[in-house]
Amino acid sequence: MPEVRIRKKFTAVEEIFHEGGPLSSLPLRRAAALAVIDNPFAGAYVQEIAGFMDDLKPLGLEMARSLITALGGDAKVVEGYGKGAIVGAAGELEHGALWHVPGGYAMREILGGAKAIVASTKKVGGPGTRLDVPITHINASYVRSHFDSMEVGLADAPRADEILLALVMTTGPRIHARVGGLKASEIKGEDGLR
Amino acid sequence: MKARIRKIATFVEETSIEMGRTIDPPTRRAAAVAVIENPCAGKYVEDLSELMAIGEELGELLTLRAVAALGIPATSVESYGKAAAVGENGELEHAAAILHPKLGAPVRRVLGKGAALIPSSKKRGGMGVALDIPLGHKDAAFVRSHFDGMEVRINDAPRANEIVVAVAVTNSGRPLARVGGLTKDQIKGEDGLR
Image 1 (cartoon, each protein chain N blue to C red):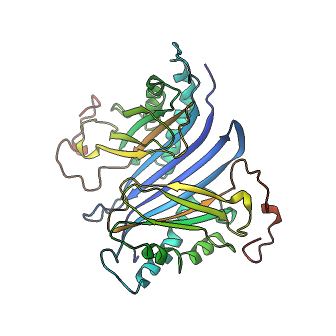
Image 2: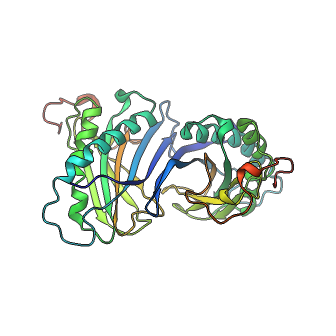
Image 3: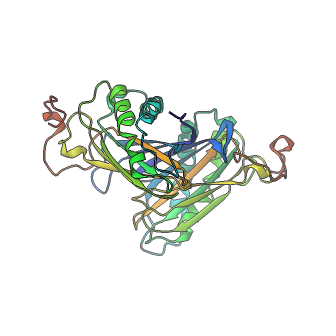
């Protein structure tokens, strides 16, 4: 399969102190790592694309590590995660699906075996397209306080023959979470759901 | 801290390919962005000294954050810029009060130098408005390779009574600069221009 050619990387970190309510003693941090790569399948229908997932594994691991670094270097602070992709105009949605395995498993590996499925989204779009990357708790998808999202995007990407790949990690619940549901303290941690 | 900060975001962009050519080392730029309450929102306030003091605080805080995100010694920063977006209940002059009287001195203190004017832009806008932070060489405004810009945006800011304030720094000029003019090795560094 083709080599992974990276045009640019982008890291964003948000530190949230309040949203009109009480100041949090522990600000919520969200971090996103983006990579803009060539889409080796742009411009034509290619039947066999699955092998590219293996080629993306090293990039997935690198991006997951960069998120830990951006959040201070300790993987233990990470409580939520998500992933996404924007495929440029000459590609197809299925090319974005190539990111599920390398992106998701990279984060689980770096986080030491997170149990929950990694929430994800994808779309086809032009440069400047914004993507709301969904976020859920890393060990139990039903933890309501950790349902969140982070908007990402780049003014000049993806070009038609590119794919923008995204990984996101967060350090805690929404800053003023108070709508009940399963709490992080109640996680059984057996099935990745509760 | 005079500023009431709701959130701080940092962005790092690294370009390793431009128009098919490898950029080695990659060009890198970083922005630190604060979302603050606008103490003068919703009314005409003659004396804007409170905003000027906030500008001084943010000059130091955001420069430190941006340099840390870039991961280079502060003295290695090559270009810089600043910008602000005022929410709809504020006045363009509020952005001017933050950016112009006092923000620059702490930026230069952190960087060790900075003879050139810090390029700036400002606007009023709603949540998610994009700020194009102009960039120029920190010691000689005429260095043509370093005329550049960095777009930043925060999807949930500024709210009507908020201001978004940004400082950007780089380790380089444009990725494939080739339109002549003063080059960085020709800088005299006396007047901030050449």
